[in-house]
Length: 128
Image 1: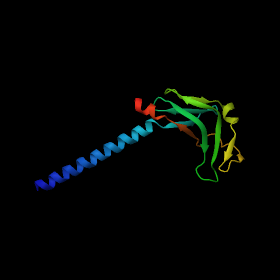
Image 2: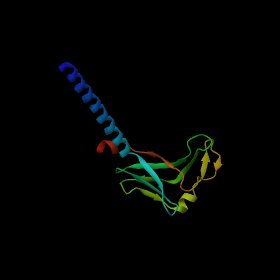
Image 3: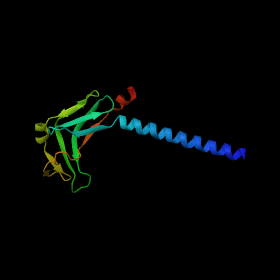
Image 4: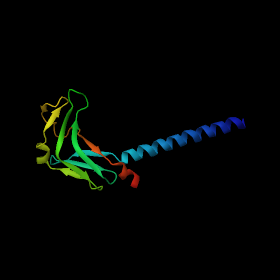
């Protein structure tokens, strides 16, 4: 009986440790993820739960080949702190969108999901 209880306690401890490691890694990856949100005025806001640097060069919309479109930013955006960055509505409307084959395509609708192609240098993660 004592052996069964000991095995159950060890099993629960193992599951608890594995869960804690998973939660820790998930929280860390979320901390270094950049979010793109539409603003009420039609602009885009880039934010993260941590300081940068984040280097943004392109935006993406759509997740299958038929809907996928990308736009290269006219200037690279560098985010160095948790205040993030912003594109005005005028800047968003001037972006040139292309389909998966590089052909010009209409911009996605305002409010639709947009993701940023960004680079988060390893040195930024290591300094934390």
